[in-house]
Length: 306
Image (tube, rainbow, N blue to C red; front, side):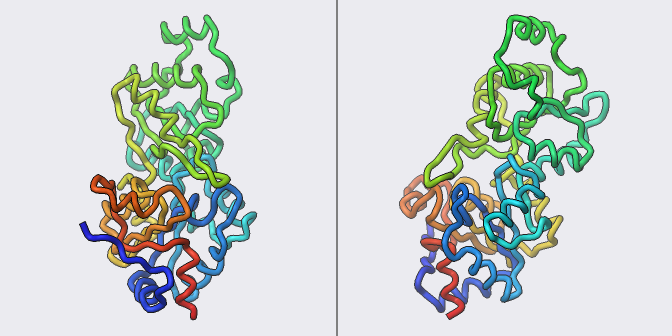
């Protein structure tokens, strides 16, 4: 398998790389920032690409924030971005449910395991839901809960889908409700299946760690609507009318970002070494994906301005 071209420090190669593409899809965590820390030179790098007429789109698997909330985060970190440039897994999930799944009454409600970002995007698409941030689900399970879940009296008969994202308050009660809905035939969706996410120069359990117990219990794999799902790529292509051959995916994680670009038949993929995966990961014989190019950090592309 061909190994990626190393761009850092090679001005001619960086300029050639930038000229190959019209659109750059950026992962956020591990590429632009880690937690609340913006990597040095990110703003200037984005400005450079935009000054050359390049379209920038921010594609994140983080489902805890809606697009308006993400725009606020960008602003708070000093990174210029329009809401229209942001494409998150919560938004991708809402689009999938409303425009592809098209749940019909009386089974048109979604049981949500996740945060307000999912709820806000579902509301934007006029999708009814229960669960999520509802305080009544943020408590210990009781004997009455076991009884009501067993006989179905605690379940909402209108639920036809279970959507699982990152949930800061995951508990036994939420998993028990989701399990019972899935046993009764609800569609199983996940905003993404990332095992971890980077924050504060470390890693923490990701949305995939929330859905794994349900996979183990039911034997079902969810339809994942974040990277590397091609349902997400199709939605991005439809919204931005991009030419895949002139589009590059930029990310830190091989099994989501780079795989997303390869399976989406994009013109190229760029790995940055400020997040999850390192050079030895794609050099391994069993590498899940190999990028086309790589840099030590995103700001290395600024050499093109010299």
